[in-house]
Amino acid sequence: MERWLADKVVEEDNVLHLTWGEPWGEHHTMHARIVEREKNSHLRLQWVDEEEPEAYWEMRIGQSELTEELCLCVVDYAMAEDLDDLHELWDGNLDRLHQSSGF
Image (cartoon, rainbow, N blue to C red; front, side, top):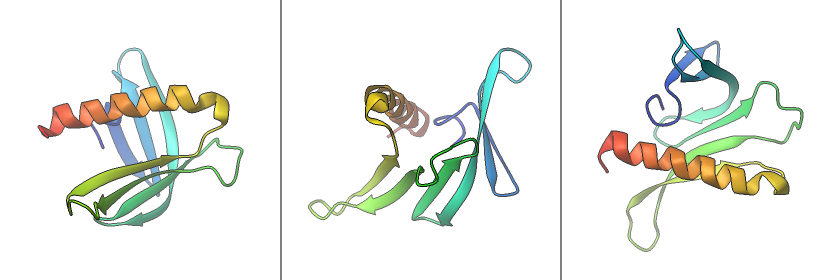
């Protein structure tokens, strides 16, 4: 997840610490609790400071029924007024994934 989701990702006690920017300079860090994880399948997270107990975001590896190719499915709980910002955020994240992986 490092290099495409955040500049630095550290896991400690079932919490991911995601940092954007340079640690010695201007940066922003957010913390996400790992709610559920299955290797080679999915990762479900909840922001530590999230007030809505049902809110989560998830990345899941799936297989297309039509082409049988693997795909990355992202689910992100959001309020209606935040949808445009989240689409822009995940589009950027997926662009960085393509650049860092070469796919």
